[in-house]
Image (cartoon, rainbow, N blue to C red; front, side, top):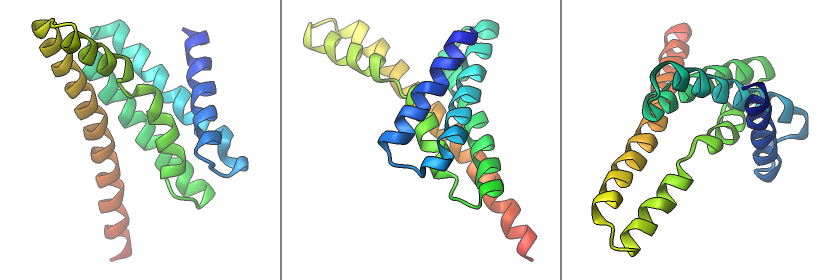
Amino acid sequence: MILQILYGFLATAGFGILFNIPKDHILEAGISGAIGWAGYLFVMQLYESPIFASFIASVFIGIIGEFFAKNTKNPATIFIIPAIVPLVPGVTSYKTIKALIDGRNREALSLGILTGGLALAIASGLILVISFFRIKRQRAKH
């Protein structure tokens, strides 16, 4: 599990470099990804639900991204976007299309529902956190 969390850190740092985030914030972006991936792995051990695990991981990523944004006075997106990429259901999407091409329609439908659920879980987790922090900032201004 420790090795997988390290891989989450490295993947996120790599995507941070690819997305050209400031070099002095690659460490924080990598930490965001590691925390998100650790949350995913933890939930998968408890519930074995990739959709719920993706939701919780995206909530963790959103929270840590907002924390780093406040502490570094940078936009949260430079910490959140690279950290979310390892959660994106690329393999599941590929398997869905492959099943469609091969004429395995029931499998394609099942995989398509899973892919949509994963994408919706990621988006919902981020929207929840981002909305919470936006409301909190607006209330602090007044």
